[in-house]
Image (tube, rainbow, N blue to C red; front, top):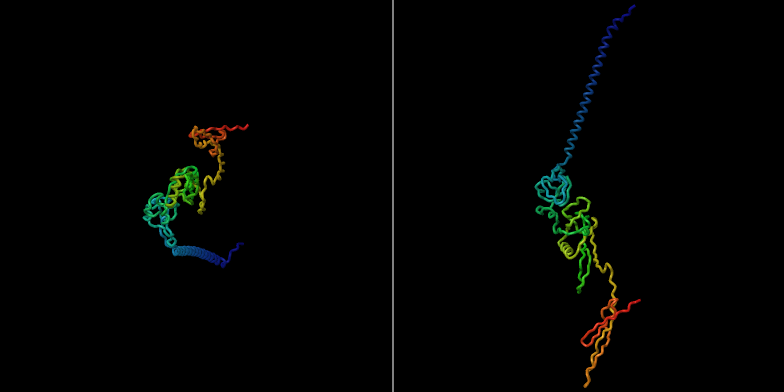
Length: 331
């Protein structure tokens, strides 16, 4: 027997299905709207936060100015030109004193110290306008550059470099007061002298020694006079100082006698017998002249050599005779 659903069940089933479909559509739409709203909210929050951050940075960032910097590594005594200078933005509130911002202010100026790429160019790093070119532009006021000829020994075998400090020692003949004798003496005549250049090298390129014939020293006018006298009338030698030691010491110098000690006094020469004719007595009347006889007297003479023996001088009237007595050889 077939079983059929009643009319009530048949009438309720389509309505229930329609209601379920509508509910799902509503929930789907609600979910989509929530996702869209959440995405829009996040995007709005991001945009607002980014906008506020930009405004905060703009409010905190100080005003900037363009300053001049070195466009490459610049050695000492470099003449600046457009190719060696660049511009860089710098906070206006922290620009160092003396910083230059105008290209015209550095044109044809000479650097007084080595500079690295990107270093700020200041007035203190440049020689005054009109100071000249090359090493002449880096000589300080009231100072002089003096060339000193050196060799392997006096020039410290090429280990001198620009920026080192040296003492100058001279060795010369010193006259003895009230005498024609002389004595050789060495003395430090200049101390703590800066080496400005070695040969044609104005800056230290490397730590290797370079054999050069000339060293440029930075001295005062008075020191240049002392150095000229020491180099002209004596021999000079340079001694290297520590870069942290700039104290000067007072030394009396040293002579050969003081260095080696006094010489032992020589023995006085022995006296030798010298024969001198006695004064003839007055002649008696009626008789001939009396014959003078030689008389031996002691007189100091120069010491004879070891093998020559004694020397006897005999004076007969106006004649002087010299006889050498051969010394007996020791067995």
